[in-house]
Amino acid sequence: MTRRARRSYTPEFKEQMVELYRIRSKSRAEITREYDITPSAFDHWIKQYNQLESFKEADNRIAKETELRRFKKINN
Image (tube, one colour):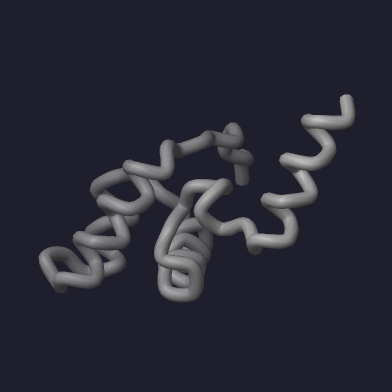
């Protein structure tokens, strides 16, 4: 069995795939097959979107972490 090369996807692409699934436009199997996404990656995207409603890193930070990053930038 050969290993797939690691691929990266944009937050917009992930969100589009999850939305296709959420509106029941396509089944999970159809999406993973048609867009050549591993089922485990797709399941992770669905879980992540359901919990955080965003794939953008900045949107998913808690306020304290954002404030800490801002503080570090000022002091560097």
